[in-house]
Amino acid sequence: MSSQQKTFYIETFGCQMNFHDSEKVVGTLISEGYAQVQREEEADLILYNTCSIRDKAEQKVFNRLNDVKKLHKAGKRFAVLGCVAQQEGEKIFERAPYVSLVAGSASYQNLPEMLVQIEAGASRVTGLDDRETDQTFETEFTARTNPHRGYITIIEGCDKFCAYCVVPYTRGKERSRTSNSVLQEARRMADCGFTEIQLLGQNVSSYRDPAGKKSFAELLAAVGEVPGIRRVRFTTSHPCDFTKDIVDAIDAVPTLCDHVHLPVQSGSSRVLGSMFREYTREQYLERIAWIKATRNRELSITTDVIAGFPGETEEEFGESLSLLDEVGYDGVFSFKYSPRPNTPALQYADSIPDIEKSRRLLVLQEHQRELQRLSYRSHLGQTLEVMVEGKNPARGQLVGRTSQNKTLNFVVNGQPEPGIGDYVRVLVTQAFPNSLLGELAV
Ligand code: SAH
Ligand code: SF4
Ligand code: F3S
Image (cartoon, rainbow, N blue to C red; front, side, top):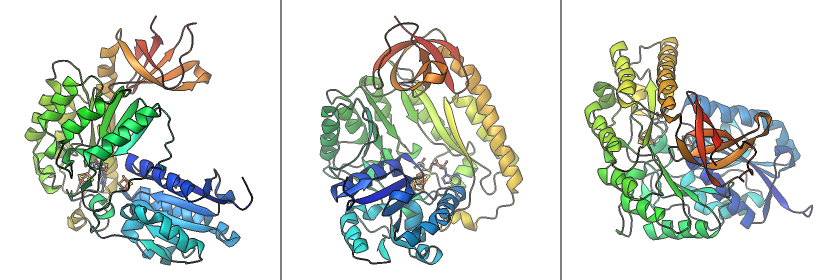
């Protein structure tokens, strides 16, 4: 590397969409002549790709900016990308005057021009959008970090406007890529040796092919049929447009993984109404029944739940607990309600004290842990295929992931050790609430 080479450091917060956006941003920067470095101190340009889903996530970014403020003197440039950038906009320059670029995800297509402006010394460059754009961020330069498993964005933005959520404001309106361009990318990835593809979107089930060729279920099946692809996952689906043909596709195409993530948010139809989720507990359970009725596969089901939404009574909270019992989830991501800027729920009277919200969250998590302690035991004695994801030398174990998206650690018992990215069969010998342990099958 010549000493003249421009360098950048990037740090990413938030969801898979953000991580994948960062892979595309890194690819774009490299194609613009920058080299990536691993420490802020070594970089000319420092980028934070930010998340504002909950208040804590947002605070993290401002703390980070505060920590590195002193580096500014050394002539470095700072960029704030992602959801906090879109949400706070130019206010970020007031709060952190040493920042020179503030850009939301809908403007990344214009990054090369914005970089030219910063390099020319511009101090307040913005790429902000107010739900106007139809652009999706596609680039041939994506710098994927994992050589075996890669993301493909199929839809960006969200039009659902759930009462608590910032995403429709930070990610713009829903816009899908053509099924052709998605399939082309999948084929290119397969040619490069990828075997697992994860289709991404804030709401993949509202995918609408702009060319009118394929429904989401058809696209899913087509990606699963790309030669060389062994596993396809997708995240996230909204129950409201989660249709039965998605389950039928999984049942029919062996490469589509045995897993559906279907966020419920609450087990109470009254709370769901006040969240603007547009389905009732009963309608949600109808979708769960489809998922459980597959003929050829046993699908794992995971969800997201919010505890302590404004107005949630103790009884309604109890309905979330009973829903966990009724569905028998394989995993639950649960969050304490966090009031967010611009969202309708901010106007709701919220009489639940913070300490009570925390209590409910803990009760929910312990409840689910007990359920999983029992349900993970159903895998004992099964032989499952895993993709090898990593090694844990301290324990003499390899880390595998099952089609159901469960972690299955295993020992090789003197057999040749498989490599990372390999697919092997593992006999399950022990079960824990969040992982399984086994040995490489002969
Ligand atoms: N698009 C996805 C998820 C987006 S955010 C979906 O619709 O399901 C991921 C999760 O964060 C949500 O499912 C929700 O459970 C949680 N979340 C979003 N906003 C939140 C808030 N204001 N407070 C607490 N949790 C929130
Ligand atoms: Fe947020 Fe609702 Fe959109 Fe999910 S569907 S991103 S929770 S507004
Ligand atoms: Fe966070 Fe934005 Fe993703 S708010 S969760 S980074 S869409």
